[in-house]
Length: 394
Ligand code: SAH
Image (cartoon, rainbow, N blue to C red; front, side, top):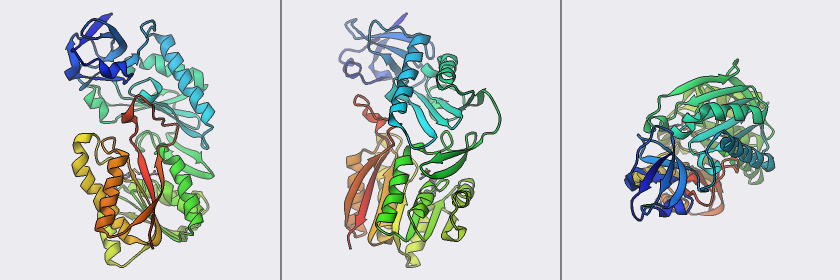
């Protein structure tokens, strides 16, 4: 077993059970991509078993902090079993569930989503890439499923020095699927959809949106960055009379239109706009339109804290425009999925947007990703999705 020795004073993070070690913390030692290594402090004290990643800034990802644990097939079977058991206890109201959420489930870099009878995974670190065959076998066995599709085409693969890889790992057939989320039916393509096909992390927030649209009697709703219209279906289910979905992806919008029909809503209640959100918000303001509820669910403006400042301006801009477009007493459901923007900063950004609008509002709720995308105590980076439900003051 190869040993990687850390620099003096750099053992703190692993001692706190944070799974990452950056390249700058390493004193000496090398290994192959994904190889299991023993990580020692500068004084030679055991800290963790980890996967080595020669090309990534995150040079080590810890598998285990237990000196007695062996990193073998049985280890991965146990980790997968624990992840599945946690999801079983959550009783998610959908047949599409995130089964493995990377670091939170002790499997750094691995994302596994279940869409009905199909598993879709992203192998996003050298460690899980190396153990792919074992992981695929145990996931199939433990779920009892036979279809497994790989979507290792995210940008993190490049950072890990891994080529993009997509296609069937087991089984085959149609990549176009229909899932149930709450009372709704949604379609997706696991081969071409964003991420593994759908934004499962917003599941509970979509349901909440349907509830508040009904409760606050919102008639006119604007869904910005709609993707395939999940929040639009929610708004229609909540009784909205008119919903506009805005996204810059034409295929996503086509699906949004299909989803309105698939869920039995009158097509006349929904409009899809293939456009840039920022420009659309400005155009709607100029046209003197107002809305009773607005969703702002933009893509990741700040992947890391280094991008936070530029991202903050972009978030502030859309939130300012959104607040201006809201009728008094209207609802803003605003999100950031940037790991580099914490809840406190996001709150400040929305406060700044309110000052500039000018508008004030009550923060009714603070929300996060659905619990099948768990956050853990030791890994604050896992807290990527945050949202505020704001009621504009009259
Ligand atoms: N709310 C969605 C997920 C949104 S993901 C859901 O619940 O499923 C972010 C979306 O923003 C993507 O669909 C992407 O196509 C879109 N997007 C990115 N930049 C955009 C822009 N400048 N204008 C409009 N849409 C944009």
